[in-house]
Amino acid sequence: MAASPAVFNASSNPWLDTGDNAWQMTTATFVGLQSIPGLMVFYAGVVKKKWAVNSAFMCFYAFAMVLVCWNCWAYEMSFGAPWGSATFIGKPGAISTLTIMGQLSQAYVPSAGYLPNFPMSTFVYFQVVFAAISLILIAGAFLGRMNFTAWILFVPLWLTFSYTVTCYSIWGGGWLFQMGVLDYSGGYVIHLAAGAAAFSGAWMIGPRLKQDREDFEPNNIPLMMTGAGILWLGWNGFNGGDPFNAGPDSGVAVVNTNLCTAVSLLTWMFLDMAYFKKPSIIGACQGMITGLVAITPGAGLVSGWGSICMGIISGSIPWITMNIVGKMKFMSFVDDTLGVVHTHAVAGLLGGITTGIFATVEGCEAFALTNPGGAIAGNGYQVVLQLIGGLFVIALNVVMTPLILFLISFIVPLRMSEADLLIGDAACHGEDAYAFYHDGAKEIDLARTASSGSLLALSSSTDQVALKPVVA
Image (cartoon, rainbow, N blue to C red; front, side, top):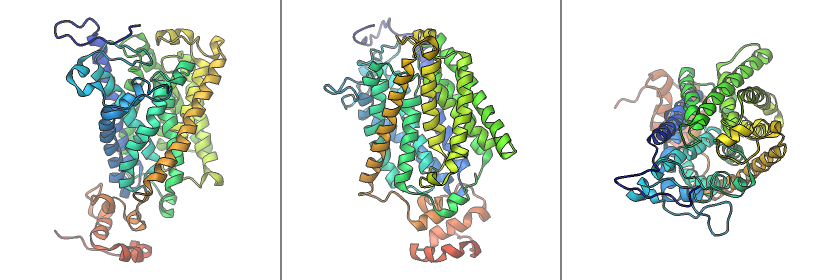
């Protein structure tokens, strides 16, 4: 293991593997496509029509803001040199890729000892798309009521004070990395963190309007399915890129990812058929997501049989938490719009624990780890380590996320006004998702012509009000 990265040389760079570099840039693009347009159109299709633009815009904004923050300070906090004696955070600062020589030089993660055979610019971009999708996943729990200005402030703050801590601790060479916690591609760093943050943040923001909670049918299921398909196949980059080379372990990760996902989807579908007496395409999408999330911490570490077992677990336990536990009265005090706590927190934690069970010695060696496999290889203590890592991620986000939102509430309201909540996109952005007059003109007209006071007075009789189109 080299002690320092190689500097770019215009005539010769023996450290550069062009195949690895090409694969890494490709997988990074796959992961970026999961966010834009993947989750963007998934959210736009799965929500009520009046929230389609707002939901997509939350994703679009988050992706852009994270890119800027990552390059200016957050990358160094996640993968840079330690901040003094701290073992949970790197020293903040602009990264070397803001200079041309820094972009061209070999990638290097000092605390973890990573020294991939591609440039620093490639590594930085690969990691930023993971950071971006974390915020976009959180948005899924806040849809339908969060003030967009509050979201503007939340994204850089959560990235800075929560994501960087988890990322450095597990991936950047921090204390959980040194302890031996396994997280192949982000089951903890991304999904468990996002799920815990989403649930606690949704509690802090408060619920949607009562009528929206009771009637929140998807406005465009084919659009939702388009996003789901992009999300599934994009996960080949999500997990296939984490060995940092185009080697055998990448292939293992891709096959296991798809196998676990298929089993999870089918398990969820069959449970829907047994309990609700009919299969649901929305339910199948939930099972797909839980399978993708659960395999993520162990994608290249487990065998094919292990991934099948993980798929059965991820298709059943989150199904129970969402469809039975989630509908109990004590869960109603938190309005998690898309059930992110079930699909990402529960599935992410299950994936981490089952990785501690099913990780193989050979898979760990292929990923350049010294861990002697998981419980099936005789290393039962790995499950304990996985639990420690999971509990840390949950605790950090359950505390940090409400604290960030509490501070934001002193600057701007966390929620939209009641008047804006009644209308949705037209009030928030002056735009409507679809150009069909009858479905959208009423909301557009109200937003353009009604004052907040008169709108509240009309709210109880809006459905009976006949409005003429606004003529430009």
